[in-house]
Image 1 (cartoon, rainbow over the protein chains, first blue to last red):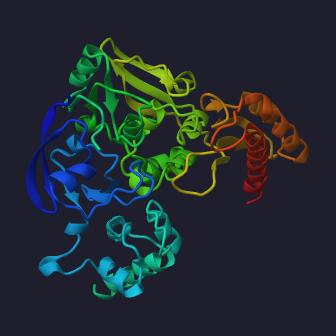
Image 2: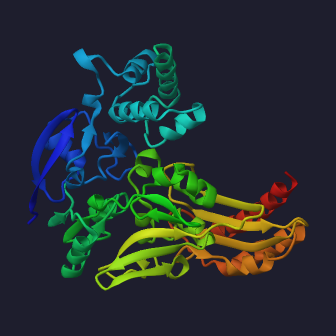
Length: 160
Length: 289
């Protein structure tokens, strides 16, 4: 029988307390305990990137992170990417404009990874592709996703 | 799906962590979890109690005199970008940037990559050619294990069950001109486990001869290992076509590859020969530059 453990995590800017089984993954805490089903489970082995979230500002595959390890940390999911008034993150806007979504299952992870890539910064398409290489898409492909990322970066610079 | 573990503890100090590991058979240390979580999920490893090392914050990367000390919990993302790592062990920085993909690199730790002891561990060949050691702590005290005595077999290390890796110590590279390379062979660049990996370093003398030759390979034996036959073959010689041919043959006695899901033993033998050949070619190119 698994013991339960209390964890306090700032989820999308809101400090929340959870009591979960010792072996609970961050992915399941988000989907089951926090009710945030935007984050998807694909492979469950850290290979597809569908479950990517930000942990203290850096992208991680939430299927490989234990909820208990996140005590005292900050998590941002796809639900938390948008700004005030429900405005989409510039990369989410760019995904819409460039048609970077088809079935959409990988999109939450791609949106989060792209936001992280913009925050990290990249010099060229090669570096951008490398930052996004942990996210698999089986329908749209990657050209439109990378075009959206470049578009978001250019607009970011344009608005500075 | 919850992982099949009964308990998870998050010790706030090293002595506390060591006490839990020593007191509980079935306790297992958890760092980034990028290997262990998958193994627990698939039943390839088991743990009654997980000892999450996150609060120990062994993440610093710093020079101590001419020695580089990398905290066991430094992530691949930290290692790949740190200026001291790039200067002291460029092939290690290169290898860290090729572990999984970026979200894995933000979580996977250098200590975890070694403790997991995969024959294909990306950071092992670069650390082997750097002559790195592993600083470990246990209830009985600290000790330092040379990396080439650390790996004992697939998933097996010289660590006692109640010991933890604290840091990795990297001695300085030779001061003169050197050639150093890391190569990872696989079906794509990211998100793969190496089919064969290679790290090489040599000093290039003004007459073009190579000295202090160090070569290590991964995924071609039960552990990542130095290729001592190649090293002896190349030492003090010029990397011409004749030497390249001899070295590609010499490496065959340094390795003991098997057939597995990623490649056949035969493919690995050919790849090892090609990587040795390429390294020697790059030594020749680097000298001309």
